[in-house]
Image (cartoon, rainbow over the protein chains, first blue to last red):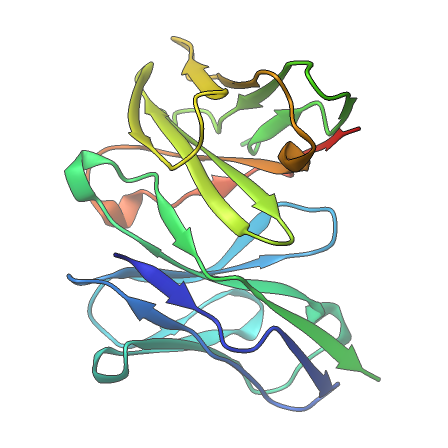
Length: 116
Length: 116
């Protein structure tokens, strides 16, 4: 069965420091991978996505993620964190199994706190 | 272009009642997916509708149902509410067909349901 694991429930980093959020997935075929961010009381905003090709993908707000098939990972990175990045981050895997493209499997999320 | 709109934003109901939530997708999108978000279970897929047909369904009891109208707007209904149904219900829309690379899911802000 498909699954997504985000090992870190909560991470605190200092403003200006680098960030890496971990994501591991379990999926039998080529996965479609996503990172979403959720601010308190809000819906999910797409940060970036991977479908195929270049394994390093760039997203919005200065985020990037690297797909590593051998490690079944899709870690999110940012070189310098801003206080406004404090939010909860979700990794997700999608598929087009059976023609349905609207079913995302999400990890449990990583809450990011930013120290001034 | 307007985003995904969910109404109402907040609802308070009592056990045993039923509730209907509404979702208006982005113009031109024909797929609507619903997710339940709780602190304990995280984000879980409820169902997906495409062209007024349920295309995929998650592992939820029959008390949870939905439908989609010809203009792609969708509603979900929960009957005989239980305390455990308290959650943030998120709706996402996408084109729903064609290449997966074009079927990014865009989320609304959600409806916060509290069952007392």
